[in-house]
Amino acid sequence: MKTRFFRTLFLTFLLPLLVSGTAWGAMGEITEFSFRSAQEDLLGMEESSEPDGKPDVHLSVSIKGIGAITDVSLKAVDGVREWDTVAGNEKWGIVVKDATGKTISTGSGMPIVPFLGFATLNLYVSDDGTAFSLTREYEVSVKFIDGSTATAKAEIKGIPEMFTPETQVQETGTDAMKAFLYGIRPADVAGKSEAIVADGLDDAHFRVSFSTISVIDQITIRNIDGANAMWDTIPGNGVWGIAVFMNDSLKNRPDGSVRFAVEGDTVMDLLVADNGAVAGGKTRFEVIIRFIDGTILRETASTEASSAQPSSEEGFLSAFLFPPSSGDFVGRSESPGGDGKPDWKVSARISARGTIISLIIRGLDGAPGEWDTLPGNGKPLAAVTDNTGKILNSPQGSVSIPVEGTMEMNLWLADDGSLSTIANRYRIIAVFSDGRTFERTIDRGTEDPSSEKQQSKAETIQISNSVKAFYMGKGPRNILGKGEPADIRSGLDANPDAHIRLRLLSLEGIIRSITIESLDGKGGDWDTIPGNGIWHIAVTENPTGPVISKTDGSITKSVSGNTDLHLWLADNGKLSANPSNYRVIVRFTDGRALAQNLF
Image (tube, rainbow, N blue to C red; front, side):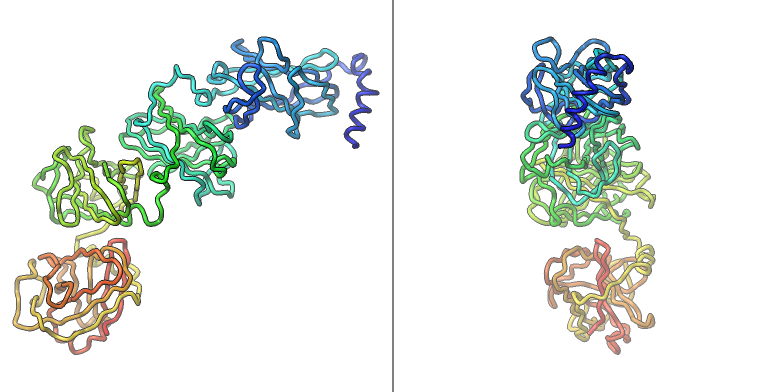
């Protein structure tokens, strides 16, 4: 009521004085004119007052003085386009709102808008790409009731992706890029601004995958229907930013922009602050990537079940890099075939359903080296074998590997000189035929006995009730002799072996070694690690079954649920005399070391 009263008072008593212009001069000056965002859709092209499904450009004008506003207009200084509030002319339309968000313009112009001291106007204009696709200077004009006019100019950076000008698109199509929307995820990196700063709310997660060699210059995400939304990496235009991750590394500059190289198969995760459009679930989005050479990739983000975010039960469960020991499957070419030198091995375990069509090993944080299964791209081959040692590559090096549940595989790499550098880190990437991509940073394992022994001193050994070990006495089998011969079948003596029954309860993983360790350090040790001077352990799956240890004494055994194993070792006279002075340690490829005392 008070507002209405003072407005009436203003019009009744002050307005005639202002119109006369006897003592006031110019009614107002523009103190600020700037671009705000491109989020809302209030009007269509030309003079249409109907929303057209595309976000409008939002500009803000601040005015200082005492007077009344009668009209607002906008133009590009170079003359390519003009906008105003009057219908029926050659100019496109403007929607004008006050500082509270109330629309004050009408289809036939603007009413008299009085102001005392300060006023803020929000202008919304549409475009077809003619004006706002390029960086231009714009001029706003505010006309007052006494006939005076205040003007201001501002340079506004172009937003080409908002308008889809067909003449600028050089590459499109669903085969060029895959894009997925995973919804709101438990991560907070981006906020409701251009800066990549967390805002305390979970972000929306998009993922794109493509293969090209170029430099990324800009990324944009925008709605193509439903609620209006737009994010990009263009600094200074007011559009909310995109946090861009590749190989778990944030690629944005401090101002939110991006410019980085991609080489071949590329997967990027894009995190944005949701304005409600993603959470609402009724809006489709398009991801647009612009490269430095002008090429553009664009694709509508899929939300199909087949492209859903990997659950905790999907993806790589483990991945370890081991130095050369045995196995020569590849050289430094793209074709299968050894070069006379043992290969480095990546031992991986993946859980998924689908068909793997490519595997990549790639250096992280600037580490050199890349191996893959893609023929013809100049990268050295990664040979792939299953857990039986069968080669899964085609004669050209490519793969098509069906996965139904959990699968173990080994990737064999010819060293380029970088793999032995401990500081170098690598990532394994699996691409499926439906576009899903699973990734994992590779941990360094070792098959070097001295390193294994040194690591075991620093590792955390956890006493676990999931491990049960029972001393069963001596015999009836005699598999091993004393010591650690290069071949466990050598040096057999005449004495029956000590027998330990090992039970693993509800455990999942891949066993990489088993150790029988003296608790006081004086009773002697046994293990399945070859070449370290510690006596061998032979492993069977039942009391009378075959030995599953390799001839060098090592073992790699996948377990799931409840598992029984039988351990056989040459007695040194101390074990049988006091079994309770020993414990068994089971080490897994994921780094777990679980232990329990002998019963």
